[in-house]
Image 1 (tube, rainbow, N blue to C red):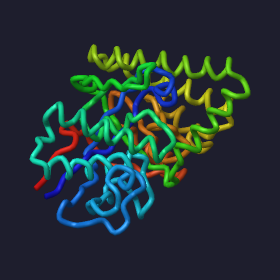
Image 2: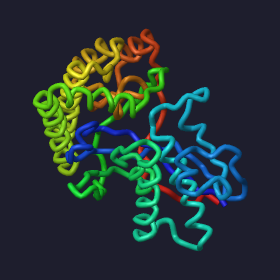
Image 3: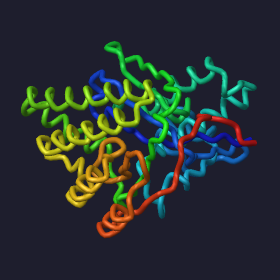
Length: 301
């Protein structure tokens, strides 16, 4: 028995999702695949927290990595969800059933948060449910993941790998440092990211290509301002020229998540131009092939 769980791209709401704003996340067709017939030699900390070492299946997450380095597509969440999917499938449960997915999400989110000292769980939601989601946290800490039919027709996502993995918890600590130093500035920056995310949700649900790209551009500007104020390299220095090139092509360029490395996304009405791809390559960024996933966690055998 094998179970696959997709990775994700976070397109709106990074950091602000932790403060109650919505996020837009899309699952992608790069998967962690758990083999229920083989035992893991070294389970990830998240899988150990959920299942212990004895019951942990072997997981192939090579599609979410590059030469052993994480790409920033939510590999730890996908590996955890695939592993838990094996347990539920072994029990005869249908991984497509809403009640099974709710239980799987709750189990995975708890284990993921335990190991990573919090976090929103947005990557766990994408791995469980697949598709395009509006994800938000309630004041009581519960999570809501509502499906959006699709991204706006004609929207093109091009993904670029920085070549440098980023530590989400480390970036989060730098942003929390800003809140401790200057709560007012922190609040203003988070509010701006949240406003852009709400605009992205509205545009996605309305199928507005122009509106979504404009919201992505506003989100990128707000993330860049947060990074400057928090002394956090959300946008590494090498990406500044790429942001301008994307805007010149009527697109947007932003990190998928916390930034500081990992993958960035070019969002627009057409694929990234040749001059953009060349400029990205010149600063060490490599284009990656991937497409939206619609299945979420599922059995492959």
